Length: 357
Image 1 (tube, rainbow, N blue to C red):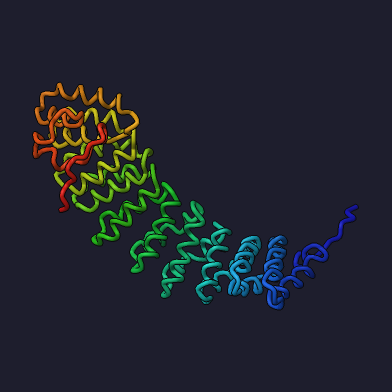
Image 2: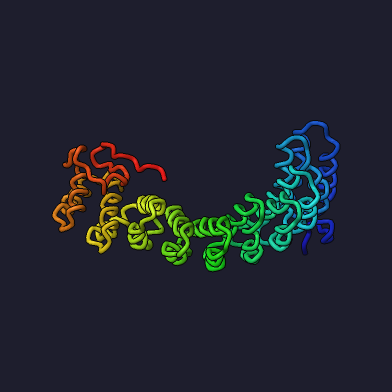
């Protein structure tokens, strides 16, 4: 025989609903903010049994004290799906602070909140659109059902909405990579930039699209793809050979982005740079040894031996460049071919910095 007190589904355990009503009243009647904060905390401890206090908790999102608003946000998140309807209403019609905290609560609820905010990405109010994107970003991979809407939001006129939508797509992961990569063909340069940044957030699953982007016919796609690979860092190692080959592009801006990406990849890029010493393209040969010299300064002895081997190359310009990296060429004898290169770090001396375009 179950001797524990029972209650109806609407009332919860005996006594809980009375407590809920009491603390809900405290939220609007207590003058001391610590009392209101404690009331919100106690309501949060009841979880979904505090459903009856959701209206009062939503009203507390406009409390003049931030600590009270934060506690009310946490309580609404603990109520969960039973608070979704009223949180959506607050997101639509509330003030700026209320919208912020409602978005935080919806983000903590996660996946179940996604269908309730997808359409808000296209609201006429840019703050509502931004908060909806924040909720989806907080949902992470659970926001996958909103992938199509987020992709459309990449074209939002507000840069904050675009950036947060891109972040949300990036956090969804590999499932969004193909969809985002399609935006690399958009006519708007800002859309292409945002798409590349999003692929960088996605990380390793986006590598095939970024590697292809390095040879894109559009200048900015090539540059942004290199930036995105640098953003990924060491996990972009499979693209090191593609980046090395991109050093042969005559575009100085692209070269700078590619060099930075290779440096961020680190040791995994060194074998490909070493192979670049014998590349068919002379620019690749010269720039490979330059990047090689700058990478991983803590490994100078190993680098020095490799660069000394390059002094035996048949390419006179490469030999001169290798000597320069080793500090064996007087500054007065520097050639024009190395003036535009970055500064090597092997010996700590400065090279002439490339002139601005």
